[in-house]
Length: 110
Image (cartoon, rainbow, N blue to C red; front, side, top):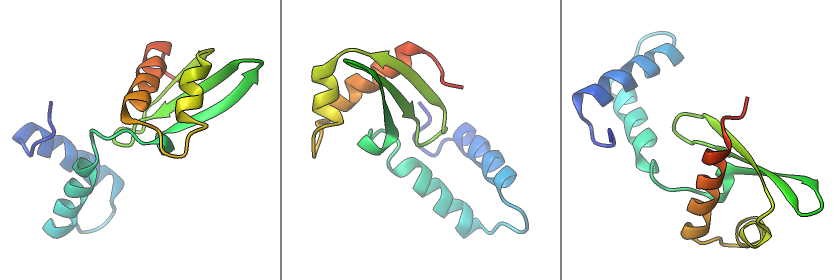
């Protein structure tokens, strides 16, 4: 896992950072970018999910990674899990991780 500032991680981040920026790049900008990117890497939040009603007892749940911006989608009928995440003011980390694993097992959303 490349969550520390190892050489490979810095090279990949530098290439990604340069591809998104135009003009001169200072070291301070790059360090600030690395800190922002790696700060909340392991935390799943309710804002990473999109819930779409698909019929009686069916929801399409889309998870978007805050780091890579990839999306995974699944249709679920697990209403206790939906109630524990979507319909809750402060969902538990355990429930968010479970919903994330459901989405990732469902495939990539295009």
